[in-house]
Image 1 (cartoon, rainbow, N blue to C red):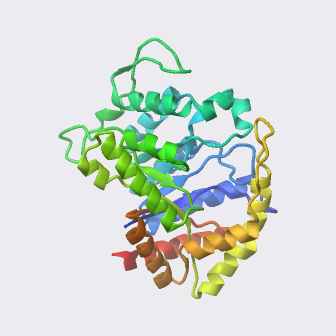
Image 2: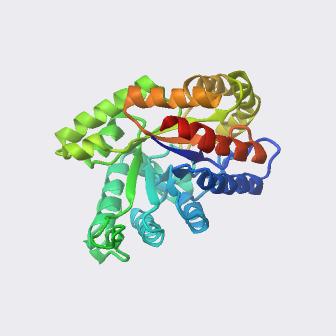
Length: 346
């Protein structure tokens, strides 16, 4: 079982953006000190839901401040990035961190970001497969020509992500791990066709995640992905964790704090084309998250994670630990997750 934190740098009502970012950095440092496996960083633009606009930039900072914990993006929104620029950054972080960086990418949403960064609806609705293909070419090949909307003459890949040697210094360890955020069967099949593991959202329950893992395995086999890669894909389940002495206390901590953050954060999203979107009820959403994720005493949290692993086959977790909105409480929550829950998982 590999358990990490999922860091949004959430700006709760009454907080400043610098405060949210400081809490994000501190929670990552505590995660390493507490023995957690990874820190996963989200990126958002123009909304207080999360005030980190560049997951790779924050990843670079955290990789420099840590020594053992993995740091990944969850995710870098590909339609807002040129695939080559993102590939160069990923290679740089992979090589300079000794292989501790994971690049998570996703399609994002139909937000005004597409207008600001110039990708437009085409990049969101149709451009993701070509952009992902170009990104993977950049991380695997010595020379790469453009494709799709990103056309250019063939150029040399510098630095080469696959030049990092293994722990014995004997052979290349390969490029950085790449995972794909999947919210639809189409994206599941795309990730599977390339043998790339999935990041599944915290709004999904175990049954839905199990179905997506099953679809991924079927599609991966059909695409010719080797059996070992299919069985050891390393999918990641996003969720929420709040550790308390009693389940009622842990739930109350989140129900008191998260709805205000969700209300102002989700409501701030603006669609690029004015399309109507349905806003989740913040209280009901928080209660739902409490009901399906490790929210409660350490023993309960460990049982919940073990049950999810058994039902879905997923053994890697990225858990939101900043749901209280408070620095000291977040640090304590991360510490308890690492020192009290993780040992129970074996």
